[in-house]
Length: 113
Image 1 (cartoon, helix red, strand yellow):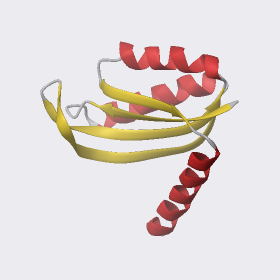
Image 2 (cartoon, one colour):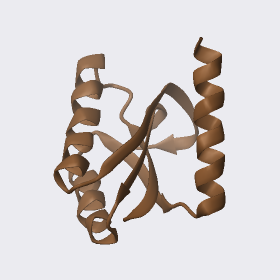
Image 3 (cartoon, one colour):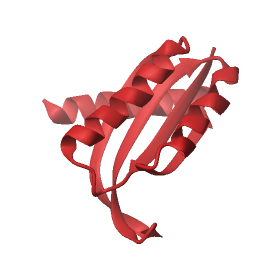
Image 4 (cartoon, one colour):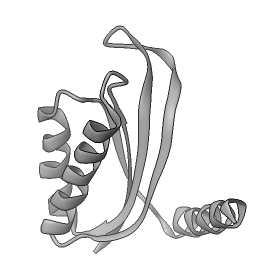
């Protein structure tokens, strides 16, 4: 199983309930494909660097997970099918990126306490 990280931006016109349902839908999809969820982060509503679909902001979310490589293409197809997703990016993490992500998680957990 490979280590992946996906960041996706949801449409800012969605309600909090719709955002949570959409994030849960993608998480459930990954788990149904045998993924091991390592971390989920809600970065909240952020201003975009440039307009996307005439929107200037969006809800950012990050998933870090382990799954076999064959599940990534169907997962990204789900993003393309969902109108509430404005952009997404999935990257495969190497050992250095995995170590950096672990440090980021520890730092974020320490700042929340």
